[in-house]
Image (cartoon, rainbow, N blue to C red; front, side):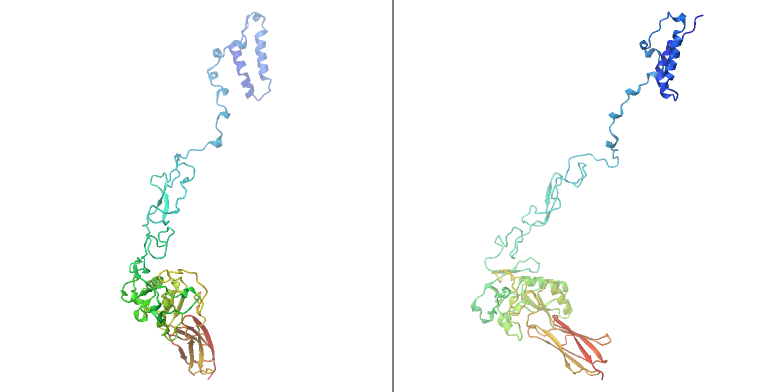
Length: 467
C-alpha cells in the first residue's frame, strides 16, 4: 500500500517557523535540526516515493502557503531608533504662555522670546535734554509711541536765563543774552519769587564822605562795596520778598547809600516761613559811620556788608526757635540777645552786584578779630562769677553775675541759668537775667549751669557751708 506523504505545505511551514520556535524554546539548541531530520527521513525512506519529484524549498513562493499572520510587516520595515530625535532635545510645548518670536520693540515686552526686554534700545531711563529752549537735562529717555525707537520725554517748561549770576539755562554761560541791564543792578526774589524786582546801583565815590570809609582788612569778605543802592527817591516800600519790603532792611537815617544781599533776604524769607509768624527786622544795613556811633559795636560788623540782621518775633516764638531757624539756613554766625537774635552769612561769597570784582572770591582765614569759619571772634567772651557771699552759706542770698565782652555789639546777650541742689533736684531756672539771686537751703555742692548769648556756656560749682 502506498504510504501517505506529508504535504509540502506543512514542510514549508515547519521550515519557516522553526527559527522562531527555536528562539522561544527554553530547550536545547538542536530542536530545529531534529525536526528537519524527521521531515527529511519521512520524505526519502519510502522506496515507492523514489520517483516522485519534490520542489526545493527555495523555489516555493511564500504567498501560496503563508497564513494571514505572515502578511504582517516585519521588524526590519519599522523605523529604527537612530531615526528618532534624542529625547533630551524635545521640549514640551508651553501651552500656558506660548511665545511667538517677533522683532524686538521698545515697549517693555520680550518680543523676540530671548529672555530680555527692550534690548537694542540703550539709554532707557537716563536723564536727557528734550526739544526745548534750554540745555538742562531735565527729561527722561523713554520708548517712542511706535516702539521702534526712543525719545527724550522732557515735559518741563523751558528754563529762561535771568540776571542772577547763575547759568540758569545750562548752556555754560552766565547772564547771557542781555538779560542784565547795562547799568549795575541788584535783583531780589520779589513777592512771587520771580527774581524780577530790580534796582539800579550807583558806584562808590569819595563824595559819599567819611561815613562810607570801611575799615581796612585783607580778608576778601570785608572788602568795601563797589556799588550801592541810593535810597534817595527810591521806592523803599517795594516788596523784595513775599513778606518783606526793602524799607525793613534799609533806612535812610542809617545811611543814604546802602548794601543789601539778595541771598540774605532769601534766607530771612525762609526763616519767616519756617516760624510761620511775622519776623521783625530790628536792625539791617548800617553805614560805617552809623555803626561807629553805636557803643561797643564791632569795627567789622556784618551789618555794614548787608548780609546780617537782628530779628525777633516779638514773643510769638522763643528766641531758641529763631536761633534754630537761622541754623537751618546755614547762617555763619548767630548771637542770641535778650530780645532778639543776630544772624549773618559772613562766610557766603560776596554778591556780583555790589562787589562785581572779585565776585565769589575764595574766602581767606579770618582777620581783624573775625573768624573765617563761623566761630566766635577772638575778642568775644562770656563768663559768670560768684559775687557774694564768700563763702556761701545756707540761708544767705547768693549772687552770681554774668559778664561778657564788648564784641556783643547788638545789645545785651541773653543769659540763661539753671541751678541744681546738692540732692540733684532742679531748684531754679531763669532767662534774660544777667544777675542770678537765690537762697540755698542745704549745705553741699550747688551746681549752676549758665549760657551767655547762646555762644558761651559752662557750669559754676559753689560749695555752700552750713549756717
